Length: 83
Image (cartoon, rainbow, N blue to C red):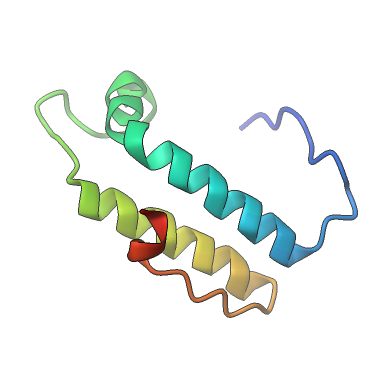
């Protein structure tokens, strides 16, 4: 896996990273299905499969909350927060 780019401010606090990640997730959610299809060579989703939006939302929120927990933060994001 290649990492390209860095946060502009390397002293960014964990809560700021979570907030920025949540903002990115809100923008990404509307294009997630197309992104999954376009990048199916990188995942195991078949051409005939379509991931439901509620599943995409659940994974995005769960991952953001997971990052929070790893930094000792109960971020408490819900799927309704993506809309």
